[in-house]
Length: 510
Image: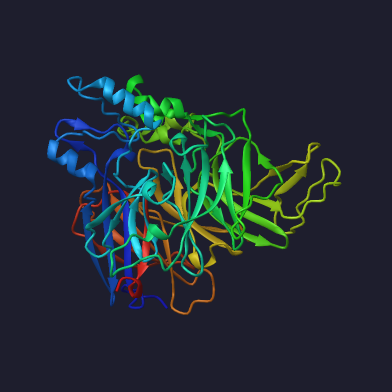
């Protein structure tokens, strides 16, 4: 059916997170990913949409606003110590800890552990929030529950509601390694206010390939039985990170891309915690977002959005975003590769007597290959699905299962890169999009229709901002099948472009 209004079956709250404040007093952040976290909520109830927003009342926010200047370092903005203070004491404590104490300005995503919701970035701090009021309930430190310095803001949720996530343990915790962990669905204890993380369980440790240069990762893949971790040659320089404040460099400069290196692919059994012994690898690449992964006839198939360089973060320095459009295009089109949606396939059973050069992929619906090498390792050649989409979303009921559709934001090299949202049919390669002049939609979020059977039976939600001052921002509701507009709800407030979010159905918010 075509609705003139928001469908009444759509009941729940869409939480969105992203940077929203870039100046404090006379000080200004250098990078878009540094801005103070601003959380938006769009509550859908009986055909109406209610909007609320609030800056995340993190410790960082409180310190900055109290001082009326930026006093806490962020990803691309380093704040240096007051020379009047004991610099030698600070130096000793920094070196002792091996890495600095990070900000709790959690601006990337909203994630769930148990029945609790958290504003999250990629550091050891997360802030639990009330999804209705957006107030901070408590600041949490992963380190109090599991040996981690950093963790992703893109966990996975299985069919039972358990949460899986990945983090990095650095020198402070002994031998450095990547850590996969699980928080069970029943981890929350509302009566005693105990943190959900108290029930965290470590699934697996994966040693760094290079002790002082761990791979940066923003997300990972998960199927019914496996975790897929891509150890890419986009690396964190640990010594540079630990001494950044004394070298007068920011944390962003501690990330380096080694285009001459390979990309290792780790496959971990979720139940046993053991990594598959086969060495899978591919050419150097950079990945931020996995799309989906599943198992098919003795293979693990996973799709992700890859780049041929590590320059994407450079584009979001505010000095770059303020350039005139043509200057911005010229300076970034050459330096930054486009996002490419690629499919990789890993055979689960490998005959060691397979002749060199043999392709081990037996699936008929993909051109991806895995080629046996002389040393027994397997070289993966991906299939390209689509070029130009980022911030992928899908029907999460198909997460870890064979699927057909994904949605995303079309990337163009302009100072406002997400001007279009699109839908890709992986089987037919049909591409459908929504666009409107002067409009910039956020990451698309899929919500299934009640009782839906077909994968794309539902709606796409996206908050849209406009550069036209006469045009109010609005919440857009699209038919996920056709990408035709069902409804839009204008918002009488200033809305910022955001990053990621989480839809909470009404029954989960009671």
